[in-house]
Image 1 (cartoon, helix red, strand yellow):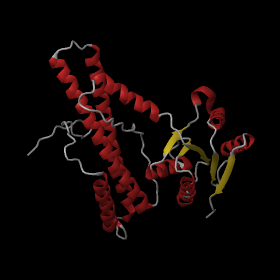
Image 2 (cartoon, helix red, strand yellow):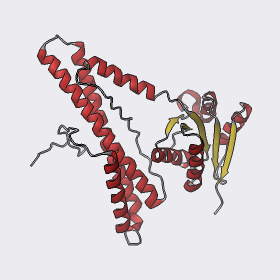
Image 3 (cartoon, one colour):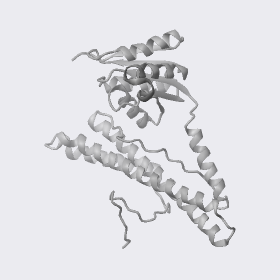
Image 4 (cartoon, one colour):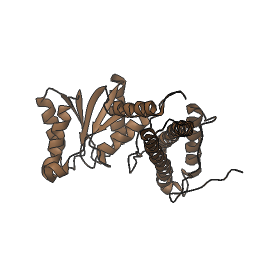
Amino acid sequence: MDTHDFNSEGFSTTSLTTTDLPTEDHIAHTFEAIGNELGDLMLNTGLERVLEQVSMRWTSQLHSLIAFHQRSRDVEAQELKALIQCQDGSEIQSAQMEDLQAKIQQTDAIIETLEIMRDTMAANHHNLTGSAWVPQSRSQKSSRITTSSMVEAKDYLANRERAETLRSVPEGTLVAVTGTANYTDTNRAFCAFDALLAKYPDLILIHGGYNKGIDKIAQSWAQLRKVRTIKCAPDFKTHGKSKAPFARNADVIEMKPRGVLAFFNPNDAKGVAMNLLQKAEEAGIRGQRYVQPVE
């Protein structure tokens, strides 16, 4: 039986390999089945009241595991850089660099596999509870780079860093999302976003990054649909509490989005969201309003 070492976070530190990794479809189907079994077990029983908590924590644990392996991969990348800087041309050091490069590639592949598991569980969470799963802390994007064993370590790192840079400068149809803090009509927002995606397959959503309201809903929808997002949060340190949200609106307009979607809870203050709509109108950018029905 294989033995594994575990760190203080409860994650195995044993070296993993990508030998015979399951296919993406196999992983997705398996975790969809897990979600269905969880629903069958807990819905319409005394456990239904804690279903959302169970599903949320399960998904969040996968997200934490991804972050753990991302941190490990970054440490390995730094070790590889150090080896490159002090390389002496010896066969021993060349072998060390090749082994470390292979280990980084293995970790990248495992991260991508875990991300499929997490994203499927996030979709299960929404289907079971009607609420959006949003991570408490944002993990880095995976960055598996396809390289042959003959590529030098320094080239591998350069390719990897270049891929990260390209990912941070997205190309596509930008649409900004704004709204009030207590907007909770997830179904209406999802329908609006789905219609937008059908019209613009290269859609990129700009949102404020808050863990509530329409920002939380937009981020959850984007994760489920695998749509790219840009977080444009207010810079309170630079502009202060009162001016930062309006300065953020100006930054959004500078990105030249194709449109602005504003989602309002009628019981909330609307000043910041209305300001973005006004700025968009002045810039010739179309705005669309959605008001949550009063219950």
